[in-house]
Each structure stands twice: as structure tokens, then as C-alpha cells.
Image: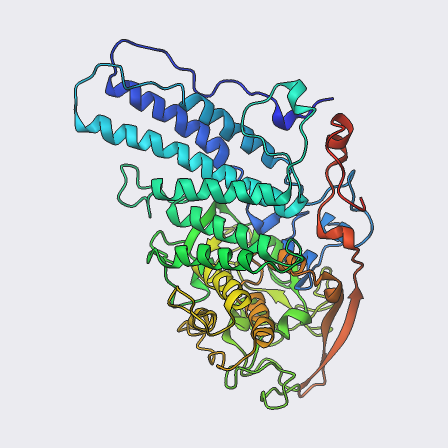
Length: 543
């Protein structure tokens, strides 16, 4: 048995040396490089079906997946371990191997000493070929970050390995991986375009300068966080803040005026998107997440009361448990942060032209199979224009957001607060407070700004809540509670019990379940198959 992820693959980029360089030669080389790059890009993740049909939010305190047979429940039922890996991204080493191979092959291309006519087209094509290398390096850095945030210490492989080498590699430290990610993204960024709209091939979904810098900033944020920065090294936070500001300072990105449009309609001119993973036409996500009671609906990722409670009151900007918030427990969804209605379907919501009824006996409640246990259904990312009714079934393209400008602002605000406090701009010209208030001022949201005068601790609490609300169901909460080392505080999962009294409804918050969490779960286990063939691949603690 061998480590297949490090094995050498067939040559993507076989090269036939000629005496003279023709345009056709470069086009041919570019075609082969593009083919190899496609094999690296295809590994970019989509969070619509991350584990057993579920989003990763359903492995956090933000959601419960309605279908009991899904493997997402193994996070909590004791079936998770080295031999039963979940969200297994060890396969990212395959994409890394492809990137290594591409970079090795491109280095063999020697054009300098080959005679050709000095037509400007040659320079354009060769610049494009050179840029492809930096795309590959950026993607490789992204996959290394994704592996490190899951597994911690992992091997750092920068060349194609023999079988013997593959079965004897040792781990590098988490910090060494982060240092590599930072170095690669720093080198790649100035060699990538701000966008591809002015390039020869006007493509979307490729890594840009902003994407490289956003990957770097996120890697540094994770490295500065408590899970990996037990001593609270302030330089780590300063580095993370500076890296996030580099994205902001590009001036390339801005917030969409409409929150929901970021997720539900792909637009190549969407200036909030930094990097996305696009999927072809389908209706799988809608079949999974339409509420029961709608044709084809299976409920899927049902938001928890924990998440719903995080949405503040719009008029006051206060949490619902604040005595001056204006919250009415008898009318719990009135006057809330507008992002609640854009993210969650609750009792009385309108969905596909019908009023949703989650109470027992309602058109979308028990005893229907897969009816929500939490009292809620998912709206964010769900395209309600899709028709699942035969014979008029429709499909749509879907876009999974990997990086967007709002996340960069939140990353910046967090790092700035930890390094300098809420209202010190340091040398960047923007405070943590200003960054988060820019998000709250989005025209479709228009939440009251965070007040001035908060302590670092007070701002941290409010910022973490803002991050939870703004980035809900974008595969952040699962990782945030780990990097902040608060996962043990998030194990109680709550629901809203809705009762129809005939003339009104009563709403009762109840405990739905308590999920186990052990300290070893802060990192994933190394797959058993890898530790068997390689004695140097030491298993993570506790597994």
C-alpha cells in the first residue's frame, strides 16, 4: 500500500524542442498548461454538499441537518476517527502534486535562445504563460492552508516524489505551513491581475491579486488566533491586520448594496466577490433544502435557535436579551436585523408565494417526514425560482463564495482590535470599528453602527457575533469556534417550539440536543491509511 497522493502522474506538459519558435508553439504550450491548471482548479471546494449532503454549518451550533442518515451526524455520534474521516480534504495533496508537476514542467520551457520574429503577440503570450505559474503557486498555497487548518502539522511537499520518498515524508509544523502560504502569496500577488476582464481570455473564477492577498490574510488570522497562538503574540495579530489591509488598499472591492444578491445571483461584475467556485446548472441544493411541504423539499440544513438569537434588533442594534433591545418574545421575528430574513425561513415567512407553517400540523411542520426539528428552514443560497415539480423541473447555476470583501473587513477588524483596540487606526487609516460599521451600513441591512468607547473585550464579543451573522452558512462558524477555542461552549443546541393556538402563535425556546466535544476535535485525525504506510506520519493527539 502506498501514499497515492504523492505519486508522480503522467506528464501533462510534454515538450517537443524545435529550432524556431512559432506562435503555434506558444499556443500549444498554453493549451497544455491550461489543461494542467484546470486539474488544479477543479479541487476548489464547494460548500453546498460538504459532508453527506450537508453544509458544514450543520456540524456547528448554527444548524441541524434534517436527514438522520447523513454522515454529518458522525461528528457527534462517536463514529468519527482516523478510520472514519469526515470532510476529508487529504485529497488536496493530489491538487498539490499536480501544481508541483506543472511548475516543474513549465520550468523546462526555454524560449530565450529560440529565434522568432519579434511580433508583440509573443510577449503577450509568454507573459500569460508566466502568469500561469503564479496561479498554480497561489492555488497550491490555498490547498496547503486548507489542509493545515484541518490537520495542523502536515508535510510540505514542493516537488514530485518517488514512492519511497512519499512513504517517508515527515510533518512540518503548522507555523511552517503558514509561513510558506504567506511567502507564496506575497510572491504571486504582484504577478497576478486585479481581474481578468482586460486579459486576452476574459475569464472568471481564476485567482487574482486580491485572491492571493486574501488567502495570505486569512492564513495569518488563523495563525494569530488562540488555537495556534496560545501566548497571544501581538506581532501575529499585527501581521494579520496588515495583510487584510493590503486587500482593502487595492481599491478593487466593495460591498454589494443588496446582501442576498451576493449569493443568489452570479454576476461577473459583482465587486464583493474575490474568489468563488462556480457550479453548472443543477437543483440538488434546492431539493436538499426546500422545506418539506414544497414539491421535492427535504428540509436539509435547518438553522438553530442559537443562530437566530444572534440577530440583533434593527432599531436599537442591541442583542435580543438586552432589556432595552425592544425584542418581543411573542412576535420574535419582528424588527430584527434584515439579514435574518435573508438567511432563515421562520414561521410566517413567505417562500415561493406561500406562508411557511412550521408548527405541528402546519403545511411545513411535523408529522411530515424530515420536518424541521429546530423550527426553521434555510433561505440563504437557496434559489426559490427553481421548480422541482414534474414535468417543469428547472435547474440553475450556483456560485459558492470562497472569499468576499465583507469577510476581509471582518478579518481586518478582528486583527486590528486584538493588536490595537477598536479605535486605533495604527498606520492603516481605518479602525476596527470603522471596518465593521461599513458592513453594518450596507444599504439593504442598515444596522445601527457599533458605538465608540468599547473596550477590546466588549468589541471582541460583538464582532464575533457580527461575523456569525454576516457569514452564516458560508463554512466559517465551524472553523471560527475552533480557532477561538470556544467549541466546548457551543454544544447545547436549541430549537423554537411553535404552537398554533388558533388565533395566534406561542413561541418557546427549548433545548434540542447536547453534542459532545473533546479537545482532540480541534484538529482532524490523520487518515489511518496514511499512518499505516508512513511511520513518520504521526497521528494527531487524542486520535
